[in-house]
Image (cartoon, rainbow, N blue to C red; front, side):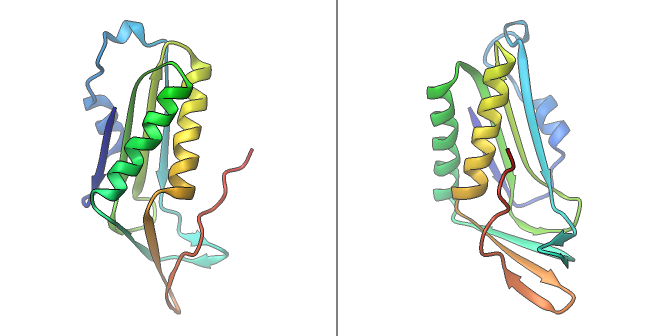
Length: 145
C-alpha cells in the first residue's frame, strides 16, 4: 500500500507507471484506476481555482486506514493513493486511486470504496475562488450509484 499527499502537481499516469508492485505483474489479473480532476463549475458557479488544505500526518493516516479497510474486505494485491493539496486550477489532477487484485470485481469494488470514503470522510478542506469572491465547500459531491 502506498499513500502520498503532494503539494505539487503530479501526472497520475506517470505515478501509475512508476509504481512498483509487491508481486510479479502476472499475478495481477485486474487493475482498477480512478483519476479525479478539478472541475471549473461547482454548485452551478464558475470556479477559477481551488485551495485544498489538510492536516499533515492525520490525512495520510486516514488514507492508509481506508486502504487497510479495503484490503480487509477484498483480496487485494496492492493499492496506490496519490492526493494533491495546495492551489489547483481547473483540469488539474486532484486524486489517483489504483487497486490491483487477481480479479476485476475486487479491484472495481475496492477502488470505489476507497474513493467514496476519501471524498466523504478524509480530512481535506476546499476553498473555491469564484468571480464574486471565495467560499469554503461545505460538503463533497455524492457518488452516484
